[in-house]
Length: 177
Image (cartoon, rainbow, N blue to C red; front, side):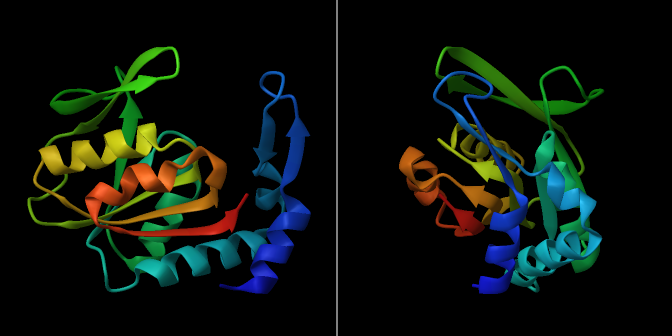
């Protein structure tokens, strides 16, 4: 763990109480983008975790794109979008998942991921793990191998990492709360 990076991020990320609703402590990562060197340091850390271990990066809409594309570029591997239902042209494959109140669906284009490719699934935040689990199931539906998950932040009390254990993949986060 890069302790200096952790300290720099903790000074930069803003905690917004009671947003988007009462009782939620929102972690605003947007100040990272005001500091190009800090952004580069985050990408360096996240890409070091995956170097020579993956064939493709899949990022979850939308904040998973903010770092996921840069990780893929740093590793010189393809980047594949995982989007909310209805945002991609056909052909695509979808995966439904449950939310606290209701359900949702994510999709990715078919033919972009090749069977057997080792995949890093990246998102900015791991909370309950529902969306990330659905992304992993989507990868498996297409014959990909979920090798790694990476996150800028993991909220440990919500046990998302526990939900991902069934994929036998490495998990990395820079910050844990």
